Length: 319
Image (cartoon, rainbow, N blue to C red; front, side):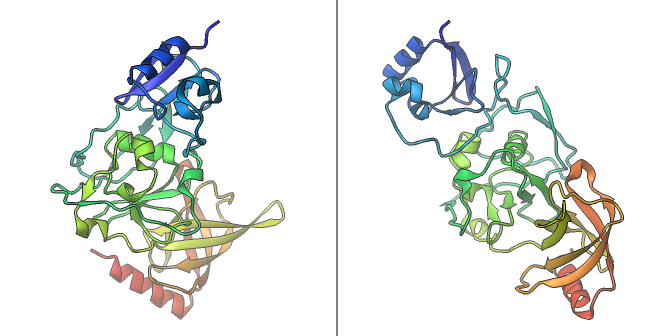
């Protein structure tokens, strides 16, 4: 039985087609080695030039930069990877449409995600968004399902996450985030715009839009980072998350799959924005956040130094 192939063209999945037709489409420049393709047996979509069995058609090149890829539309055969619809309630106003076309989201599977912010993109773009270089973080090696990313509106407001790149792609398809939304992971030095990440084109099937210069330079801040040492199976492990809804009595800590229980008392190191040294505190877990996306804690016996730092953070971030 001949292998049947699918490919993506103009944000739509086309197929199944035979390898012979794949050859003809390449010869007539309808597709190229940079076209994303899939067949049954593949876990994810990859560029045609990186498929070893198609070297005779597309030539031999280096392996694909992105280890996995979520296509924009629903597959036609069982087993193909799809972009499921995110069931999330958005608590922000209706978004301003982005200037670049967005893919059509799939309606097959569902993924749980917290309410995501919407950021209006610059209406009169004048300056291309530069791709920021970050130390000790390789975007090309990030798994699509690794929940390590946080999203925030450019204008301010709450932080949401942690999300995987797959979830962020789906939120983008639904216009709940866009190129001027801010993204962060503890492996980065500071917030950056989605338009500035080096894998934007591979994730969203379009070039990053141009942004105004003042917009492109407003993300050089780091969020309130929380580091927790927690014993799992008699082995101490280090977890990192982002704080939100901070008071001198407690806060939420957004982090994925933290293996604690309600009532646990845990030590934390707090790093409010602009704080180089950690603030050691002890807190009790009073609630587990929905979807295992974090915890709500109350502080025990805050030191005066920690209390002053929290008050400073609250004042800086108050409306």
